[in-house]
Amino acid sequence: MKLTRREFIGLVGALGLSSCASTHIPLIGGRDKGPFKVAAMNDLHVADARSMTLINKAVAQIGETKDVRLAVVIGDLSTSAKLSELNMAKESLKGFKILYLAVPGNHDVEPRAAHPVGTYEKVFGPAHWVREEAGWTFIGLNSCEGASSDVTIQADELDWLRKQVKRISNGRPIGLFLHHPLNPNTKSYRVKNAEEVLGIFSGKKLKLAASGHYHGNQVEERDGVLFTTTACCASSRDNFDKSSAKGYRLFTFDGDTVTSEFVEVAV
Image (tube, rainbow, N blue to C red; front, side):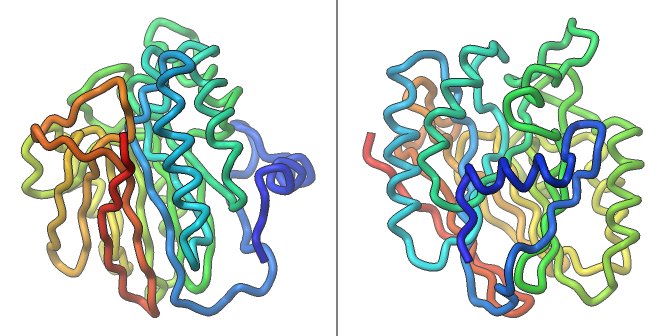
């Protein structure tokens, strides 16, 4: 069963989901078999109507891909956390005919505001969430520390993560999505307390840590965990690794294994 964005909004209303309510998004329907795919895009950096063009193309391309059940936008949907920019990003993402979820990036944060991710949450809902799909548990984590590029994930966010992970059975595979990289050998921007974050999953079956922020494709594996960053999906920004391709990443989940591939979108 495919859940449209409109249906999801209805579900959110029915469940009372908000930044102050439950952030656990249950499995919809009986789709308990794989393999299946999740599309992940990051660093959209929407600033104006022109910057929506590439995102619209990516959304359409993902929509034509077989077996994609979920899309995740891994932060920096906007350029400067303006409501207008976030609304434009949402307008592009309305093209999805599948459920999509998002987490904030540092460009989606208003550091001087009383609630720094308040505008983001007004448009996209909770800054962290849990989603169950076909034997997997997916977690969206808010890795932001204000609008900083180099971050230490905050204590209250780690406390929330511990509570969620504790509820997951030891044998159930887990995929983690957050804006700032946990990759052990990322060229830059690794979360300062990355090992503490990964330690929360001790005794559990973390299989994937997917990030954005570093505009470039990095894939590595350590202790059975696949770590990725992906080229940005923005026409307004360049990749940090000097590559020219823009696009998104497709993850294929089969049993308790996960593989990935980068998919280019023509600029």
